[in-house]
Image (cartoon, rainbow, N blue to C red; front, side):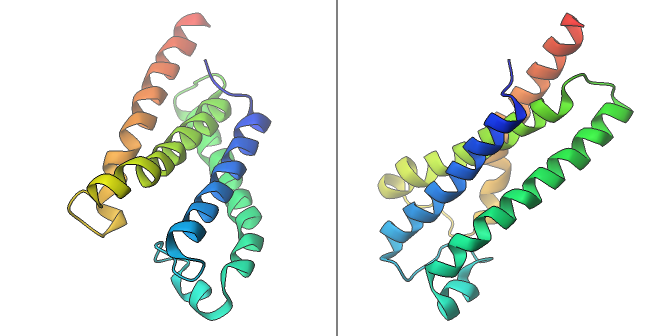
Length: 140
């Protein structure tokens, strides 16, 4: 139904490094598509970004734990941290699949702005979250 927390965090770490590697291959080792990382890559190169990935993972873990606490207090959903971890994995995997398969063939779906794509990419995560929440509450 959902991934164990440690497995989800490991998969998320691998997806973050996969995204970095994909950007390295597509950008030729010097061009970053994410506006957040562009100034750092331009100034220091991709080597420094490799060290920021674990920090980003720690940020995601903190965010997941904080959101899980809120969900467990307000909605009383059991296993909320595992469900939220799985949602983050699904969202980031959707983004990587989008970059890997759709961008080379169809471009950026009419836009170069990644922020416009966020609602489209989170739909699988939200769908899974609602289904997992319903099934978890029903089972308990």
